[in-house]
Length: 154
Image (cartoon, rainbow, N blue to C red):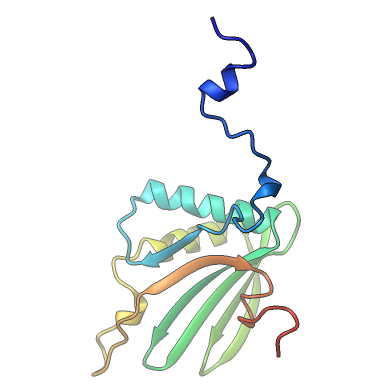
């Protein structure tokens, strides 16, 4: 027979308050390279976690790809507090920034399609000097996605 006092410890529940570990944010491990070896179900779960974090934390998600023309960034940030609308910002070194608002379902589908690609867009072999760096997707604080700098930096 176990007592209430023993029960949480026996189940391996960490009773340490989360505020004791301020350097480790819940979203800090949400990063993925393309291509990857995850199953579709795993990617769906990953994207759902990302969308939840975008809605409940001051973070944005960024898909980064490089090619012979330069860097391309696609960023996603929650546009409302219920997680049904998101801002999508796209940056191309040749064309600059473009922004649009999308539904949660459209963002979800777009991210799953991007993350399940069998090859990085960066490794396009149509040019004599292809970029060999893989595409990356990560969740970052919202002050980082657009500028890549911390507040107060110039």
